[in-house]
Amino acid sequence: MAPGPGSGADDADEGPSGAGARGPSGGGERLQKVLARTGYGSRRASEELIEAGRVQVNGSTAVLGRRVDPEHDRVEVDGIPVGVRPGLVHYLLNKPRGVVTTADDPQGRPTVVALVPGEPRVFPVGRLDADTEGLLLLTNDGELAHRLTHPSFGVEKEYLAEVEGAPSPASLRRLREGVVLDDGVTAPARASLPAPNLVRISIHEGRNRQVRRMCAAVGHPVIRLVRTRIGPLAERELRPGQWRSLSTSEVRDLGEATALKGVERERRGRT
Ligand code: URA
Image 1: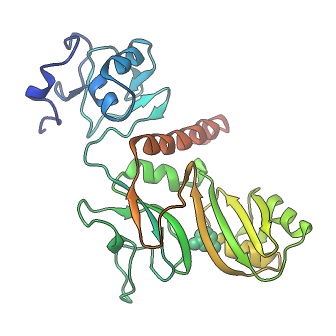
Image 2: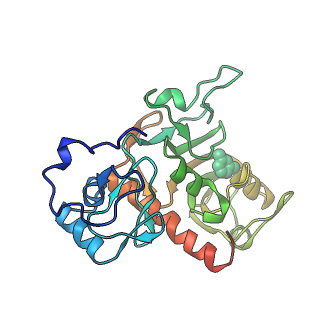
């Protein structure tokens, strides 16, 4: 196996020597260095986290001196996965209407992947309909993508839907409590009415065209649909077609959002 990044001379200036457990590869990077790089403060602060027993590697509590292979080892702080792999990129795109959420479209329509850098290759996290606008993540971070899209992690996504007519309080209540669709009743949602024909709705399922079908089911077909939030991530500055990289702390917040849902999921006895 190729040595992990940083396993060479740049590790020589580090604090306590590697007297503790070593990563499975016997090489790799010092854990505190990896944590510091991913936003957990200085190396000293990261060492304190390790000393406090708050850091796990592959499910076991790490000790100071632990080295990890960021490509293969799973690192968590307080049970929250840390995106430690170098080379991971996370883009937040404001998807314009008419652009498809695939890497390649047989019909030759513009794709979201063409709107962000081509290297390293990234893929969209979940999908928005071609006629839906708004926030979409693209990444090469398969673990985070899985957690954000798998229904059992249930990360909330918020949409603004311009609808036909003016939904009544009873319609909003139906959206909140669950609407019968042809693939079953929807889970409880949050719904409010910031303007007479504008529904703000937050859902944590990811069914096909779910918001459009929910609104249509309560008698208010969607005219325009914009995703305004993905878990903790909201963004008002990006114009349609623009993207930006997520900060380390934003990636961490996303990991945290999925970890919290993961805990609830385990409490419910699902694996
Ligand atoms: N719900 C929809 O109806 N469409 C989307 O693109 C996303 C959620």
